[in-house]
Image (cartoon, rainbow, N blue to C red; front, top):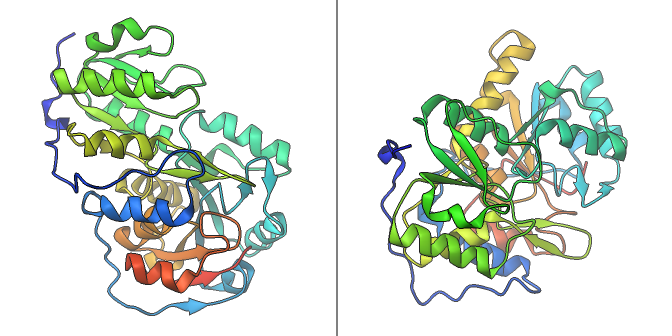
Length: 329
């Protein structure tokens, strides 16, 4: 196959070459925020011009303000394999009020069906219509817009990606094919190491090709640590001069556009954007994404990325202002 997808070959930008990337060992919240800030010019621009911020204790206190809630997974619903306290009760109350619930997750290693099963094992029931992952957004966008390609897939732990008219190759099983790929998709970091990082960097440097990243997260919160996600390794590649990727998860628009379409499908009508809220734990993904697409943003602080942080200081440092500030469900 020939590479006919040059419209996705986005020119690289110059960033602070003296920026020191935090080590993946014991990375902390402030380092994550600083890393996002260093690359902020590639993130969407906020459409929120008001500095109004309403502070409430829990999500349950503001349910009457919304007809639709988009919820992040890690840091809002669960931390690793543990549910966040009161999330089941709050979601039940929301459903009793007729609120449409959709999970928006940047996790792309597994398909949405697997995520539904994972939630079920934790005691939460969601239908297929109630979850959209950045993997879903990747499959849909590339099936529509990508010309036939040989795609190198990185970080997949599930069935093959379903990209229309294209061949997907799991490079973890066949690393000799790196240089034969027309494009790459970065899903997750389950087997990622410095060798894979160097292979990808060398391949994209010697022959620049379109590069798609499903998960923009730098880290994901667990009980006692942060796992390192594709956003971290991708930003490192960008800092070393590769062409910019096309991103599919929050804060970028593709996943939100899918969610808004899903809302119309589920409810049968258009919903006032001011009655749609995005609940998340991360300023640069969940909150900035909501602010850039024009829906309400709700920052949950007690369990995710910002746990044990000075929230006012974090907001001031980033300039990303949520509409609501809550502790938990």
